[in-house]
Amino acid sequence: MLYRRNASYVSDLGQSVVTALAPRRGEHILDLGCGDGALTEIIADTGAQVVGIDTSSEQIAACRTRGLNVFICDGHMLPFDSEFDAVFSNAALHWMNNVDLVLGSVENSLKKGGRFVAELGGKGNIKTLIDAFLNILEEHGVEPSSMASWYFPDALTYGTKLRSHGFIVDYIELFSRPTKLPFGVGGWLDTFGGPFFQAFPQGKQHLARAQAIAYIEPRIRDSEGFFWADYVRLRFSAHLPK
Ligand code: BEZ
Image (cartoon, rainbow, N blue to C red; front, side, top):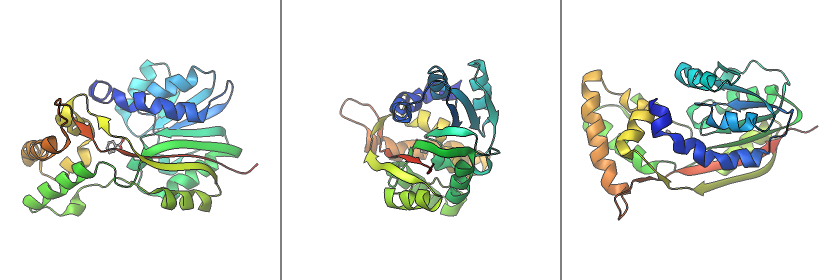
């Protein structure tokens, strides 16, 4: 599967978020945007009762091959009422643009005292890639707003949002984490470039892909020929009062 091949680093790098979650045997945990379930499985292996949700039917099918308890669901509309001891999320919240709906949903899903531990792309994330996309859209005379945008907040904004939904923020940090792209820029675009490509008619997408590669590669190639995306992470740990 393309995602598992091109994006296994997402879960490899996300293991430290699981460490921050510190799941315990018997806890009820929601993995919000569980992707292919690589981290969901690690959480389940601790003896926690994990439910995973994702909007992608392909990802949910991949999770089921691991025997995980998962279903298709949008993080803006979680159907849970005070059910979980913790909500976990890695590299998923930046795909969900209505932060108030998502945080309201997470708040409703948690029991009193429940924790929310997550990492998402933060302010400045993939700036080189986004600059490339905007440049190419302009060259083609396409409105920038035709590209679906990701949500990459800074720590102050997100911390304020968490507090406005009743959370106590224990830790929040924005940090750079240059990330090696094991299958190059083309591999990244084929896995994650949907929001960019959707701005073009089908017949132009191949050209847009080639132009994006030509723009990005020389800017992110290191002296040994590896490609490093300018990832910025926002990581936090918060909990609801008892
Ligand atoms: C990220 O993990 O930061 C990310 C991945 C794909 C698209 C945009 C951001």
